[in-house]
Image 1: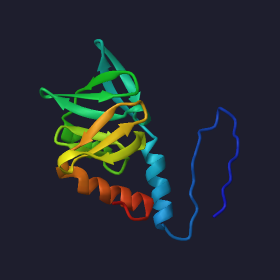
Image 2: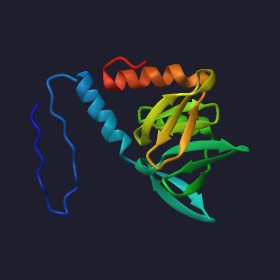
Image 3: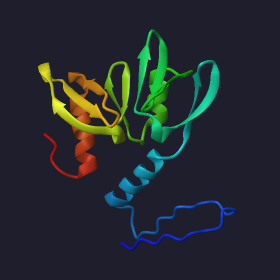
Length: 152
């Protein structure tokens, strides 16, 4: 597979084109990666409406019937239910890891087993997130598909 990158004038829209004989697993993985880095989410911070790039979101959490998204240093409230956000993030790098939490897999630095069948994920900003026992198998399956190998 060849890779070509061309610089274009700022007036022209940027376009990423994939030309392939068939849509293989590698091509699907590239498409999923590109999609995971696109888009924004409308949120509220200190009473102000803001647009948060999806690539900046570490995780989303439901607390007292309100949904918050967290970036490396900030938190925002979104006017969606967690299941609505989960549906919106389907096909991107977000995965439910607790009843009340979605995690951006691209923001994980490391994962290690914890007590009682749970796992612990250390995020790139240093935060630690617990992956509840119920969602460990989903996490393993997702990581296995992404790596193409065996995940224990």
